[in-house]
Length: 101
Image 1 (cartoon, rainbow, N blue to C red):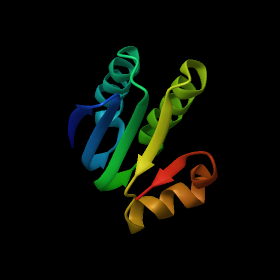
Image 2: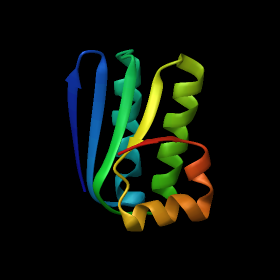
Image 3: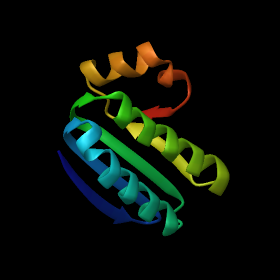
Image 4: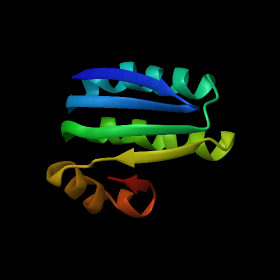
């Protein structure tokens, strides 16, 4: 998996590519915490190139959601592909997160 971040005008976008499984849970969690610590107005998790999300990976998304709720920083999930959208749908995450294309 690969994690990249862009920062523009108060928005931090985290680009995820590859498989998000237990191996990458901790590095992504640390990245998400660091991004929220910078106190941007908006955080976007861009999943366009994400091919798989395990339950461990989904926990990172929930952690981001909790950080968003407690800090007031807007959180968006962007560009879910067919596979990842199906995982979000099955788990009920589609109704929890703000999705953008």
